[in-house]
Length: 568
Image 1 (tube, one colour):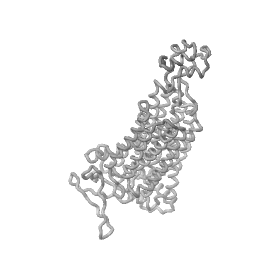
Image 2 (cartoon, one colour):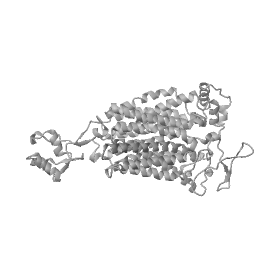
Image 3 (cartoon, one colour):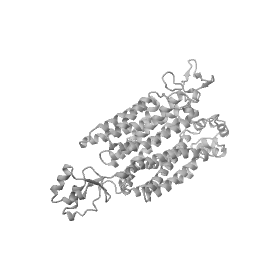
Image 4 (spheres, helix red, strand yellow):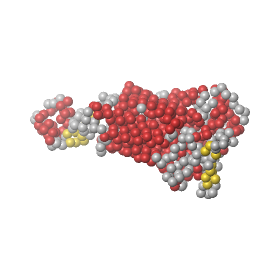
């Protein structure tokens, strides 16, 4: 018996699954706080050179006049030289003339910097002076978290396979508490970045495990719905983060506010069950029986006596041979498919996090902009729930990426000479975020259905790694505003449309049986992968499954059961 068959008998989405879905959704909110908190922790307030080393009264001017005399317009890292400017001060007019015609020399900021507190009381940028010669640390601080996510996905994935999903979830939660507390008290930027790296690893590892636990507990018919509900709660986390940051404008207190709730999730020890698939694959029969009995009783069902023995006989729990990542690219056909999917993951992640982190550079309040960036995701995910099983995966994926690409390019090209035009750039940026959110959710589902069963976990693992790389690169692209203000949005839009063009070569997986073996992937003449569809015989309702001969002369069949068509 397949575990999905057992879940159909015990309740695919009964009371038990609904309660546990809400538990995971609660953790998704906490995860979202950590995923993009650098928007506020590392924000760059307006700043200019400090004038504390200059005695304004000695020169006969007030502090405001001194600032006008020594601070160049639009320049934060330099000031006009005191020696070449103020020592010739016989009148404000003469110095102003020197400034106007460019004859006044400039110098670096010998007394440090002064940061505005209009939007933020304190950020790591203002406290650790991550500007000018230390500006590269701004980008590093944003990329470090995504590097931690890459580390966490790899390490926690391996450890959860060995020690179980449940214990590793609580290791991740405990790490979030410890690293968050140390980061909030960090005496310098290097201590903060090391803790932030580990915090990214812990939060991602715990979230992926919790996501896996609920996906393995919910029946196949409801996995798409459950997956997108979790994503909606992540979006609600982004919206609420904007509100928390608005009221807590000191980065240390904000870090504590986002870390402290981790303590609540340690109480999940008495609520979250271990993965049934992990228990069965590791021959923990009695524990699996207890979990199944709990599911049955809470859903008002009866547990058949021989269900555990039948599940242990499931061949999907026993690998016939070991597959590696090389199997995903061993043949031209598989390489064409895998590289296309992985590139789409990289681009989707890059654009998604690029647009999310870019709220600081948009016109208007950074808090309102970030709130909108999270809010537009919710209708995008609802639209996915309504459409994906009706119109398929490929068309929504392509259309949503094109929408995101076009909107991003337009947002970058609109001049910001008036308030109305600046508002318009925000509107198009939000449309771009709507499109990339829909495509990201669609891509996750489509990828799980594209890879053959024997390499599905490997293929999805590399997809996740590609997404983390995209997240690492996104802050670096945002720094290209130093070259041209419109360049980041142009790059986001161009890459999104390139990925959409390549998505034309991906297969439509809706309504098709999943490919089980590598030989079940068939590109035909256009390098487009598909698994040959089942056909219904005219005389009866039985399914006639086409067979095709592979290179070794062995026949393989696309014979996954109907309930396996959706894998998340």
